[in-house]
Image 1 (cartoon, rainbow, N blue to C red):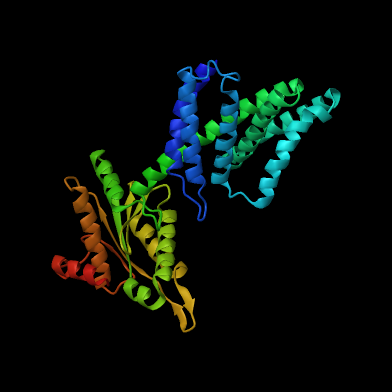
Image 2: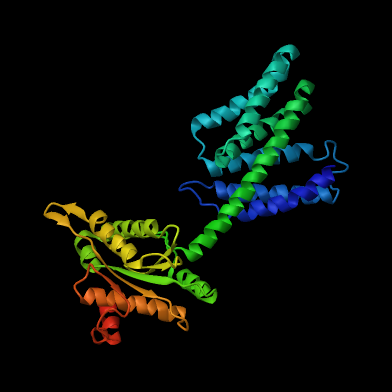
Length: 371
C-alpha cells in the first residue's frame, strides 16, 4: 500500500514543483523557496520508499513522511496567506490540542463532536470559494497528521480513526482539486494574455484579425468598425497617462456593451479600437452613432476649467465577396480617417465620401502624428 501511495504521489509532487515556480512570491517572503525545497525532499523520500530503502527501518519511514507532509502543507499555507504571529500560536496550540484530545475527551462526548465537525466539513466542501477551502483543508490535514504522530508516540487515539481518515481523504481531495483549479486558471490566464489587450480587456490586434478571417472563411456577411479617440495625444499630455488609460478603458467598455450579442471588439493599437459585427440584419448607422454618442456623453469629464469633451471618429465597412480581412479592416480605417478629415466626432461609412479626400500617405503621416 505504501509503495502504491508513493508511486501515486510522485506525479503530484512534480506538478507542485512546477506550480511553485509559477506562483507569485510575496514581498519579503521566501515561502516559495521553502516549498520548493520541501517538495524536493518529499519527492526524494517517496523515491526511496519505492526503492525499498525503508523496508528494514523500524517505523517504515512513516514518521519522516508525516513530518514532511506537515512541512509541505504549512509552506503551502504560507503561499496562500502570510503567516502572522497569532497564526503561529494557533499551530503551537494545535499541536498541544491534538495530543490532549484523545486523553481528555471521553468517548460518549467525542461522537457528537465528531458528527458536528463532519457535518460542518461536508457543508464547507460545498462552498464555492476554492481558494479558501484549500487553506482550511491544509490546516485540517496538518492537524490530522499531528494526530497520527500523537497516536504513534503518546496515547492510543483509536476513537479518532474515522475522523482522521475522513479528514485525510477530504483534504487530499480539496488540495488536488485546488491544484487542478490552479492549473486551469494558469492555462486560461496564459491563453487570455495571448489574445487580449491587458489594459482594456479587448481582443488584441492579432486575435481580432483571426476572428475576421474566420468569419470571411465561413462566408458570413460581416461589418468592421474602426474607432479612434479624437485628440488623444493632447489628452495624455495635459492630464497624464493615467487619465488616458481611464478614458481608453471607458471607451472599451462602451464598445463591448454596444456589440454584446452581435459581435466582438478589439484594440488595434494606441487609441484605436475595432469591432466585428456578425449580425447581417443590424442597422450599422444606428449602432455606430450610438457608440459615438455614448462616448461623447459618458467618457467626457469635469475639470476646474470646465468639461473636457472626449469624442471619437468612427468608420465602418461592409464585407463584399472577394475582400480579404486586411482589406476589409483597411476600408474601415479609411472611413474613420474620412470622419476625422470631416471634422472629427463623426461616423462615416466606407465609400460614402469623396475618394479624393483620402490619401494613404497622408493617413500614415497622421497616424504617426496622432490626430
